[in-house]
Image (cartoon, rainbow, N blue to C red):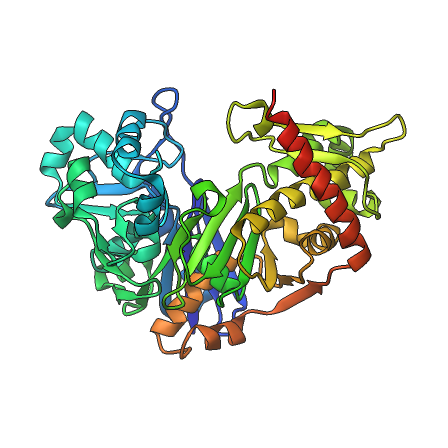
Amino acid sequence: MALIGLDVGGSGAKAVAFSDEGKILCTSYQEYDMINPAPGQYEYDPNAIWAAARGVLAEAAQKCGDIVRGIGVSSFGESYAILDENDQVLCNTMMYLDTRGQEFLDELNAKYDIYDFRAKMGSRPRINHSTVKLHVVSAERPDVIKKAKKILFMMDFVLYRLGGEHATDYSLAETTGGLDLTTYQWNRELFDWAGIDVSLLPKLVAPGTCVGTLSEKAAADLGIAPGAKLVCGGLDHIPASIGCGVTKKGQLANSIGTVDCFNLITDTIDPHIYDGDFLFLPHYTKDHFGGLIANMAGGVLLKWFRNHIGKYEKEMWKNEGKNFYVEYEKRMAKEPTDLIVLPRFAGYSKKFSDRAGILNMTLSTTNEELYRAFMEGASYEMFHMMQAYGQGIDSVTAVGGGANCDTYMQIRADVFNLPVYTVTCDQTGALGNAMAAGIAAGIFRDVDEAVAACVETRKVFYPDQKRNEYYMEMYDKYLRIYKALEEF
């Protein structure tokens, strides 16, 4: 038997078929194009997203050559599909990057106390919230809202096309900015403000809920047997944490991809943490949340190094069929550096203190030292976010491309002064979705049993106390430098 995890991402859809032991049977991926009708406007055609999702599901199901018992689906947040009475898409959806709606965000900020709002809604008002985006639609396309019979979000849209209910899970619903976490109901006041009738919105369910079975029509279209359980995986970060075994309070999943992201399991919402920038998402574990925050530079830092400082080696190794990051790890500095990389290359704002820099170089500084210093600087930034959270963290599990670099993982362990775990599966989001589907199909009793069966530790990196002491001295300088830059 097979379980399929489907993740609808920001650039494409990926379906991975797993055995009931968490072993990858096959993978399928299809991209879709982002539409850029004007500066600052970023859209998707929901029909293109569905076509890609349908395509990868069909390919994965046929490749694995086994009976599909369950399909778990997750997606990015905020974006929506508005359907008419015939379930046809009425308009494109705005992506979370879209900058429209600033005037509506200003209204929310003027109307509510940020911290009271966040204590109730899990995050402060944001321009990427669906409530703001749908307000733009109701203001600019009243004809669309007039014809609307259903509003779904990307995970729900795919599940609905497969035969599922008109339902969404709490974690994805939280990204709308309109889920009241004190009642787990849609906030009617906010959607009335946005010009949206809450009756159009999907039913709310917990993450991991089965919302139906694969219909005969969808099964025939995909070329597989009907009856597979259809399961809400949730916002992509939530099943990704399950897929690497992060399920208990105090455990933290660190996704090191293009963005460097923390997802900390907690049972409380503190609206004042990190000036309100933590995003709290309902988790699979009852009465628990994933506290989400990201450094937008993340893996982009190492990519920038590769494309500029390491461009000669990049071309040389490309011609030799070698991976730049694997080869550069072999030659990078093995000891902590005395360099300080200020890693905000993506910039948090236009302020001088929210930008990047490289300090303490000499004529003897090597590229290999710089490469390590980039990893150290990124680790200082993430450690700062950990410190700002202020609650007990017992362990870190790293996933994503950065987790494949053992030297980087040892740096993280030494800076964080915590054990850093890595796992064998590099498709943790899809695995988490498949595990949720396995629970719904009766293959696993609960999340703990699914983790025990499917999640395998690759290696654990333990902190070196002497290096931690040195890194804390450097971290103190790091903080003082950023503080000093606020004067400019």
